[in-house]
Image (tube, rainbow, N blue to C red; front, side, top):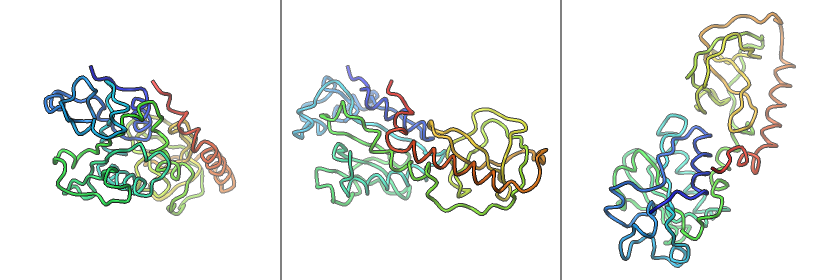
Length: 277
């Protein structure tokens, strides 16, 4: 029977920790009925299934599934599409770890499904017309079967590391006065550009200290994926802190500390934040 290998369980957990939706690894009854998908292990594959034809797939064939389906990132399909387009470029550049990626099925515009296949050469362009329209709302990634035991999280990690290091355009600070803010559970948390949704607030808070404001949003310190950092949130109430006045120095120091922590945690540490289960 097909099983979900540890490396794909870890990848799914990592994706979820970054605000993505993990749609699954092991194929459903529809996959099983067709019998050719990387979502299936050896005992569910039909004779001559394309996912067991390459030298690498034959060498690593087991009952492990070897594909993952990804859903919305940061709560949006646009977030997923940006990531998917980036991942294809990584494959075309033969970046570290991408040699284990067999194919990526995705869309960049929500209208046309594309498929990049490493078997055509890693620099090859993606082609339309090779997968069904279900991939307009999810991205499918297949890995060569001989890569079952290899950690796949390093393939995804570079996409998230720049955000954690603060390498992006930041919206201007409009208030340098500290405040106490209230925010409900489920409120979106945004990156420092003020528009990129990272995740949502797990618990409501009252009178949380915010060092500075950015228009209607306020800055707070949170931990995402094991990394301490600054994010922006839209509060339901704002009250001046008892320590009013110019808190520029404190805010800058706090942000610098968080940015340094993020830089130190990028790479291996960001992967270690999500244990393989």
